[in-house]
Image 1 (cartoon, rainbow, N blue to C red):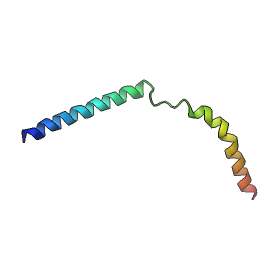
Image 2: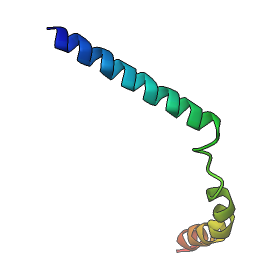
Image 3: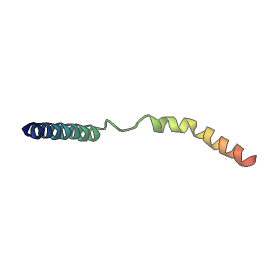
Image 4: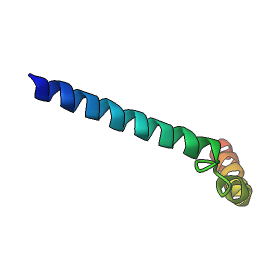
Length: 57
C-alpha cells in the first residue's frame, strides 16, 4: 500500500513540473503563431475568387 502513495506523490510531482514548464513556455511566447498571418494574405485572393466563381455558377 505504501508503494501506491509513493507512486501517487511522484506522479503529482511530475504533473506539476510539466504544468510549470507549460506555463513558462506560454508566457515566453513559444506558442505564438507568427507565420500564419503573413501567409494568409497571400492565399486570401484565391479564397475570394473561388467563392465568387461558385456564386456565379
